[in-house]
Image: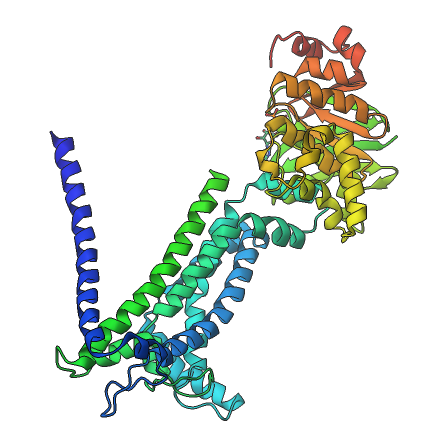
Length: 289
Length: 249
Ligand SMILES: Nc1ncnc2c1ncn2[C@@H]1O[C@H](COP(=O)(O)OP(=O)(O)OP(=O)(O)O)[C@@H](O)[C@H]1O
Ligand SMILES: [Mg+2]
């Protein structure tokens, strides 16, 4: 009797979260549908300007996505190498004592509120970079991109390290016994054997960068611009959504509906990234369990 | 003499696992190490290729001379030691790569990548490990798809491929069925012609079948070390006799 009750309660809460998710998707679709009654999907995907808040309206999503693409690219070129190298260090080189100190310290990086990172980028990193690159604008992609990369390091390093830790000791011994050096064991046995876990951590890091909002809204500027120049202000998909959500756009207008169209495009991208990551982790399980 | 082991003691932190062991091992012979569980057999054999260096708290006292050089001397290249003294482990541990890449691995890490050389060495070592006929038409299939016995012979091939002079076996058959065990035993006997073999085993019949010389360990001490036939028919120590007649262990 009691068992049945518990099972029922668990089932209901699972059902509840499924309904909430479905509800969100339904609202997104409904409003997006309304948007595409007014704007052609071709314009949406090919127009090179995004100016829904101006008198002369253009609805080309490309500038927002290049903004997201560029900042993500900068972030992951910091986070992936540094994260992977720290993971290799922690898993293959560090003593047990160093690991138990360094790992939680790294994870603190992920616990700092993103608004703090945002102002750190704007008020500290940008002026610092301007000393080296005088052309750098006050708002730009470079500085928040780098800061976002720092924030993502622990996601990559922690998950990659878990994957490397799961590689059986016997494999390492097998390589050492053939005369491999520590570096060869790390790069030619452990990393390949943990590959799917490492790749999953990369994709999770990428999807974190794609979805990051606050840092970019604060430090990258709010000017949708079709460019791959990291030195000028631009706007990302997520930064646009907060900009409109926080403004006084009346419900039901076309400006208002853009949020949903943009939101669903972003959702599709992160959904695909998460699916790839999930699939990689499944594959990883098959090998070692 | 391939090995001359002088008053070797081995410690994990404060715990002593091998106590003041001295012995000499002939080149091109098979030496078996037997003894009850936890007596330090693995620790001892892993001292011979410095595998214990991977254990953070490990410490060794005494001298291990291989062809006259102390393998623990500071200025010796440890990777060179391990290349000359190969090892096969209790649990087959092929890399999650193809059969070919497993056999070629030792050469690859030495920077050898010429296809002709690799092909030749892979074929030769798989033949010596009595695995060639079973895998010749699927060299590029995953090694993890092989049976346990085949995986273990692949690990032997992998060890042979770097042309070591010594091969250490730590209970190589304990995860294998009797047929696979018989194959590995035949292989060990054949390897004796070219290599110095040292094998740890729990199985006394196995020690009697494959080895020329046997050492009996107990609680970290080498109790008796003699010609295998003598150990199994007329041991001079009471403890050895009790162990091989199955009175404890
Ligand atoms: N990495 C280690 N750290 C600490 N103690 C260890 C370690 N490895 C082995 N020991 C201890 O050293 C002693 C000898 O162990 P060893 O593995 O050499 O025994 P063994 O004769 O090979 O046993 P078995 O037949 O069960 O394999 C044991 O008491 C064991 O608990
Ligand atoms: Mg053992």
